[in-house]
Image (cartoon, rainbow, N blue to C red; front, side):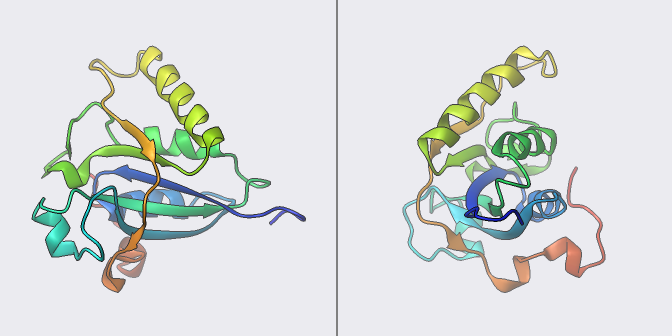
Length: 162
């Protein structure tokens, strides 16, 4: 890590958190990744509750990164590349608001960068349909159960990506 830098957090929802966590875990400059839930009203939600679609939470990955080693803009690029941001409340066969495409920003700078990145992505011509990604303030991050943490890494790789 760079000297005299403080670590920052970024939080992304892009479908099943197993795949998303694996994508961000591999990025140089990312210090840690945690699977969890954000954006709902239920405190201390369980996986079963989130999957029941009654909590309002999205499956997310909280990324702790060293901004001297990797930029937030680079993390946004990873986010856009690891899912289809034009699918409303789903990714592939995973359906529900808990699988929504969402960027939870932790600062005004992150909000500005996320909105500019979304505009750039929409104008890029990479997507035939409009992007439906939400950009909202970060809320309480609820840590997912231990068996979800580094799920694909524990199982020797693979993917749950469709």
